Image 1: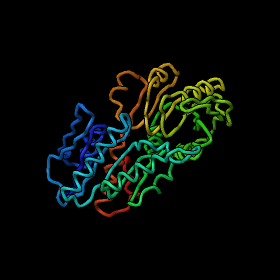
Image 2: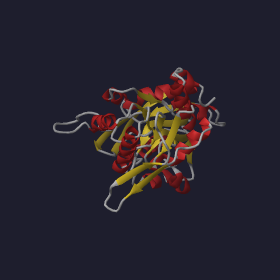
Image 3: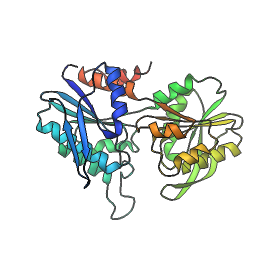
Image 4: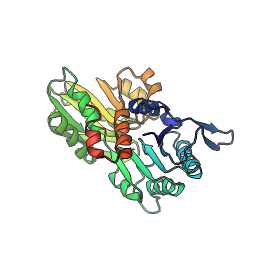
Length: 317
């Protein structure tokens, strides 16, 4: 690991520091400037010549600024003769634009993949991509790791849950719910919903039994929390004893925090793929699980040419 260096850019500075703590190394020195006209400059504070560089940067809001930071950081490393440039993007912005839903639409996720490659990235790592096929947009090694084991471990060690049922907020999330249910040894229920327009969803029916049980709603991301709150209301009407919600990415845009605060959720559990420092001050039932051990295990596996799946399976034991 002596030839390995980890940089944390603006959106994931705290996460990068935690990863370096797990690895027992210092965070690489870098400086990011945002100028008055909107331009971005990333300056590396130490030599990367012949080094294996890892950038930690989620491309959440402000999406375009954070994306430009990592692209410019990649270019800086390439011009400074880095041996490899690995981009760890825990939350991959534009992932929801993964296909043409109607004529004359772009496939922005593919565009972002092309930009990262063209800039000089040699590997990309993501966490719980919104659509798994985005891995195929890259012609360089692309690993998508999951936080379901981390979330499952949290609930397995939580006392007083009683009889649990894992709930998918829609048909598309059934596989994710099944994966968590297998970890918890619990049944699955599915909310049937319709989506009249983006960021708006209406729960219609519930497939499964939640009466007198602890329901755990699981999704890959929570943005405005409209879908989630609608699901919580339905589960309570169907007789759920308590309702927890969990996701990999707490995007929490617009009215999300206020909605979650008034939703009646026992806990809202998410990871730190997106920094939650500010939201923790305003949302008392927010629980944040760190993916730092997972990312640290991945970096060690890559640097030692060992099995990634084995390293990740032991990361939070």
